Each structure stands twice: as structure tokens, then as C-alpha cells.
Length: 184
Image (tube, rainbow, N blue to C red; front, side):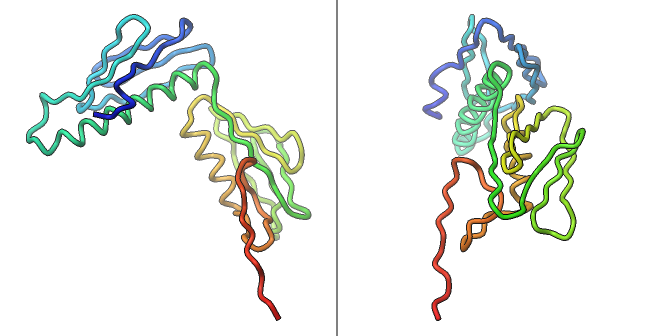
């Protein structure tokens, strides 16, 4: 079994977890998240702890047990991320490097000048919050880790860092290893 799932997910006092046949709901001070249940995983709530185990009764053959045990660790992490999301939230910080490259917010749109002939406009989803504290810095935050990471990756995709000059959009903690250019 997944070693990480041998420990329970501990629920803070201000978080409620509800499990039905088809979904898991986690409700906290920042909002509510839902996740579909999986037939391979059995979830039990004991007090403020959530325990996960493989549902080996539905396994048709011995070889299926490995898949079942892998899903236990996956669901442990998904539920833990939901609990962290509704209590603390998630945040990704992006930095824009380059002369003339900048970003700004206009209503519900993120507008970026990235060296193209036109400005890049991105609609911001309703469950994600975007801040632009400086023209070269973008902060994406929200309660769903996957949605925050995906939106930050979509922003970065417009101008990935150039390995020769380092210009582009990068994560704040990302290190760009610069390549040496051609020699004459």
C-alpha cells in the first residue's frame, strides 16, 4: 500500500468533510471543494481523522491490487490538498523578465504585453484570484491547487523563458540555466 496513506488526514476544527456514494465534499472558511469518489478506495472518518484503504473486495484478480493501492495514495493527497485549500489556499507567483514585457489587470481580464504585435488578453476564472502588484509580477491564488497551477501554467505558456537570454515568464522560485551562445 502507499506508505503516505498509512497516516490519516487530520481535519482542523473549522473544516467539515462529507462523504456520499458519489462524492467527497470538504467545506471550510475559504469555500467548498468536491471530488468524485473512486470504487478502488474506501474512506472512513473517525473523529477528526480521515483514513484511506484499498477496496480489495471489488478486485477481480490479484494483479489489480497494485492499481488499487496506488489509488489510495492518490486520494490521500487529493483530500489533503482540498483540506489545505479550504483553510489556507494555494498561491503561485510569476515573474516577467524582459524589456517592455508587462502585465496589468482590467476588470476580469489579465492583459500582458509580451513582445507580440498584439497584447495578450486572458479571462480570469471566477474561482481564481489574480493580483498584479508590479508590472513584472503576477500572483495567482485560489482554493483548488490544480486550477491555480493550471492557470499559472497557461500564463507562463504565452512566453516561456528563453534559455539564451532568460527573457519570458517564469515562476519566482524557478532557476533558468542559461546556455552559451554561438562563438565566432
